[in-house]
Image (cartoon, rainbow, N blue to C red):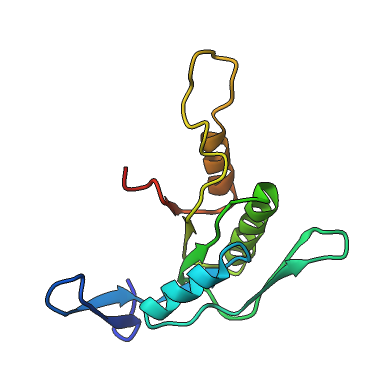
Length: 154
């Protein structure tokens, strides 16, 4: 349970009367796929994006360094897996691993566009992959606790 000073008060209008929400102290990180969206979300939540260096090594491999303490934190990563799908997916996976190794408490992947979601159920043949499940299992195996995508409400 977070301490008494680990809650952030956010004014929410929700199109109705303003109300103050108590949101557990969280940290918001962004990959390189949708930095503008991540910044808009951070602004809306009256917070800043977490300090992380996300780039590439000279051979093209993903390089991630988390530059702040995330121990026990409630972490949200905003990263689409749009084209180039594999590159953006690996960036998300490496970010999750870096945060998990830095002892993040809970990691939520916010994926505005979920690549590989076109195959989310078996169709005619038992010989086709269910790639949405493969990717979800992959994310879970590296440490994602929760996942939100644009189809989550359906």
